[in-house]
Length: 136
Image (cartoon, rainbow, N blue to C red; front, side, top):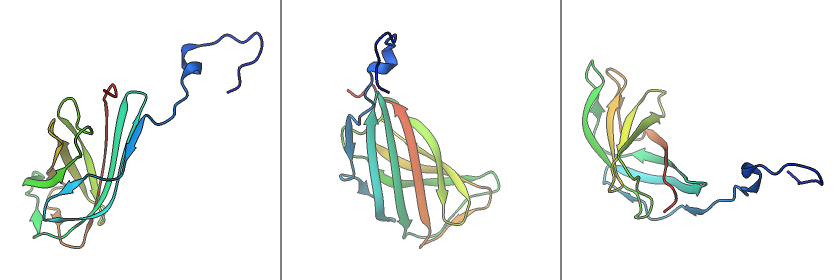
Protein backbone atom coordinates (compact mmCIF):
# COMPACT_ATOMS: atom_id res chain seq x y z
CA UNK A 1 0.00 0.00 0.00
CA UNK A 2 1.31 3.41 -0.89
CA UNK A 3 1.34 5.98 1.88
CA UNK A 4 -0.34 9.21 0.92
CA UNK A 5 -0.28 12.69 2.45
CA UNK A 6 -2.53 12.87 5.49
CA UNK A 7 -2.67 9.08 6.06
CA UNK A 8 -2.07 7.73 9.51
CA UNK A 9 0.80 5.30 9.59
CA UNK A 10 -0.01 2.13 11.51
CA UNK A 11 2.73 -0.19 12.76
CA UNK A 12 1.68 -2.89 10.31
CA UNK A 13 2.21 -0.50 7.39
CA UNK A 14 5.91 -0.46 8.28
CA UNK A 15 6.23 -4.23 7.67
CA UNK A 16 7.56 -5.04 4.24
CA UNK A 17 6.65 -8.76 4.61
CA UNK A 18 9.69 -9.85 2.66
CA UNK A 19 11.09 -13.29 3.44
CA UNK A 20 13.71 -13.14 6.22
CA UNK A 21 15.25 -16.50 5.31
CA UNK A 22 14.45 -19.49 3.13
CA UNK A 23 15.92 -22.87 2.29
CA UNK A 24 15.31 -25.86 0.08
CA UNK A 25 18.36 -27.89 1.08
CA UNK A 26 19.87 -29.61 4.10
CA UNK A 27 16.97 -31.95 4.87
CA UNK A 28 18.34 -35.33 6.01
CA UNK A 29 15.97 -38.25 5.41
CA UNK A 30 15.65 -41.66 7.02
CA UNK A 31 16.16 -44.66 4.72
CA UNK A 32 12.39 -45.23 4.34
CA UNK A 33 11.82 -41.94 2.50
CA UNK A 34 12.85 -40.52 -0.86
CA UNK A 35 13.14 -36.77 -1.45
CA UNK A 36 10.70 -34.94 -3.75
CA UNK A 37 10.61 -31.36 -2.40
CA UNK A 38 11.43 -29.31 0.68
CA UNK A 39 10.87 -25.63 1.41
CA UNK A 40 11.44 -23.69 4.60
CA UNK A 41 10.59 -20.01 5.00
CA UNK A 42 10.92 -17.53 7.84
CA UNK A 43 8.76 -14.42 7.65
CA UNK A 44 7.95 -11.94 10.42
CA UNK A 45 8.74 -14.37 13.25
CA UNK A 46 6.93 -17.37 11.72
CA UNK A 47 8.72 -20.45 10.37
CA UNK A 48 6.86 -22.60 7.84
CA UNK A 49 8.02 -25.94 6.51
CA UNK A 50 6.57 -27.82 3.53
CA UNK A 51 7.88 -31.26 2.52
CA UNK A 52 6.80 -33.83 -0.09
CA UNK A 53 8.35 -37.28 0.07
CA UNK A 54 7.86 -40.75 -1.35
CA UNK A 55 7.66 -43.58 1.16
CA UNK A 56 9.92 -46.49 0.15
CA UNK A 57 9.87 -48.61 3.32
CA UNK A 58 7.89 -51.57 4.60
CA UNK A 59 4.14 -51.25 5.20
CA UNK A 60 3.08 -49.39 8.36
CA UNK A 61 -0.51 -50.04 9.48
CA UNK A 62 -2.40 -48.09 12.13
CA UNK A 63 -4.42 -50.03 14.68
CA UNK A 64 -8.13 -49.41 15.29
CA UNK A 65 -7.25 -46.40 17.49
CA UNK A 66 -4.99 -44.87 14.81
CA UNK A 67 -1.73 -45.57 16.62
CA UNK A 68 1.42 -46.62 14.77
CA UNK A 69 4.95 -47.39 15.87
CA UNK A 70 6.92 -44.14 15.53
CA UNK A 71 8.29 -43.72 12.01
CA UNK A 72 11.32 -41.45 11.78
CA UNK A 73 11.10 -39.27 8.68
CA UNK A 74 14.39 -37.42 9.03
CA UNK A 75 15.92 -34.25 10.40
CA UNK A 76 15.47 -30.60 9.47
CA UNK A 77 18.60 -28.54 8.82
CA UNK A 78 20.10 -26.80 11.85
CA UNK A 79 18.66 -23.32 12.22
CA UNK A 80 15.25 -24.64 11.15
CA UNK A 81 14.38 -26.40 14.40
CA UNK A 82 11.39 -25.29 16.51
CA UNK A 83 11.89 -23.70 19.95
CA UNK A 84 9.61 -26.38 21.42
CA UNK A 85 8.16 -29.67 20.18
CA UNK A 86 5.35 -29.04 17.68
CA UNK A 87 2.80 -31.42 16.17
CA UNK A 88 0.84 -31.10 12.95
CA UNK A 89 -0.93 -33.28 10.39
CA UNK A 90 0.40 -34.99 7.29
CA UNK A 91 -1.45 -36.29 4.26
CA UNK A 92 -0.71 -39.23 2.03
CA UNK A 93 -1.54 -39.89 -1.59
CA UNK A 94 -4.52 -42.16 -0.79
CA UNK A 95 -6.44 -39.35 0.99
CA UNK A 96 -5.78 -40.65 4.50
CA UNK A 97 -3.82 -38.61 6.98
CA UNK A 98 -2.12 -38.67 10.34
CA UNK A 99 -0.04 -36.63 12.75
CA UNK A 100 3.67 -35.98 12.98
CA UNK A 101 5.92 -34.26 15.48
CA UNK A 102 8.97 -32.08 15.00
CA UNK A 103 11.24 -32.22 18.04
CA UNK A 104 13.49 -29.40 19.26
CA UNK A 105 16.47 -31.14 17.60
CA UNK A 106 14.70 -31.04 14.20
CA UNK A 107 13.85 -34.76 14.21
CA UNK A 108 10.51 -35.46 12.44
CA UNK A 109 8.42 -38.48 13.48
CA UNK A 110 5.12 -39.84 12.11
CA UNK A 111 2.95 -40.63 15.15
CA UNK A 112 -0.59 -41.59 14.06
CA UNK A 113 -2.72 -42.32 10.98
CA UNK A 114 -6.40 -42.85 10.27
CA UNK A 115 -7.80 -45.94 11.98
CA UNK A 116 -6.63 -49.01 10.05
CA UNK A 117 -4.79 -46.94 7.39
CA UNK A 118 -1.64 -48.35 5.83
CA UNK A 119 1.41 -46.47 4.58
CA UNK A 120 2.87 -48.47 1.69
CA UNK A 121 5.88 -48.09 -0.56
CA UNK A 122 5.23 -45.75 -3.47
CA UNK A 123 2.82 -43.47 -1.60
CA UNK A 124 3.56 -39.77 -1.32
CA UNK A 125 3.66 -38.15 2.10
CA UNK A 126 2.92 -34.41 2.41
CA UNK A 127 4.09 -32.68 5.60
CA UNK A 128 3.40 -29.04 6.45
CA UNK A 129 3.94 -27.25 9.72
CA UNK A 130 4.55 -23.77 11.10
CA UNK A 131 5.51 -22.24 14.41
CA UNK A 132 6.39 -18.93 15.99
CA UNK A 133 10.15 -18.76 15.74
CA UNK A 134 10.94 -15.14 16.50
CA UNK A 135 13.49 -15.65 13.67
CA UNK A 136 16.49 -15.88 15.97
